[in-house]
Image (tube, rainbow, N blue to C red; front, side):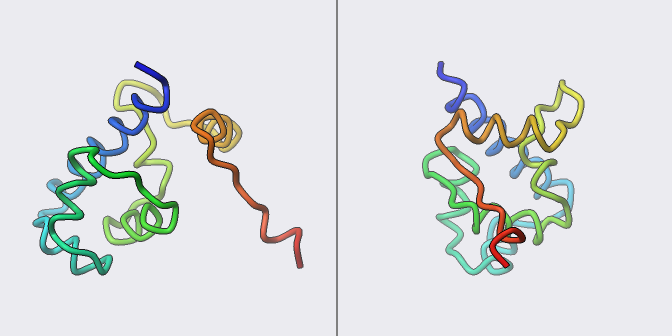
Length: 101
């Protein structure tokens, strides 16, 4: 299994687990982020790719930060540099909007 596939599974698991801990249904979370319940089902089942914007909305809805969604349950929380490296391994690049000003 590629690292990318593994981390997608971790993210899907964390989203579902945090949603359940918060006592939200899939319908509740769907309404919170402006998508269908089926989309939430697909996200939690790792049947769809997440856009960064959707991941940010999910984190906001769950009252957590994105790091918590990327975190492997058996590992300590990642530092910012490690997160950037992990995302870049999956083909995602981040843009520093502060330096553009």
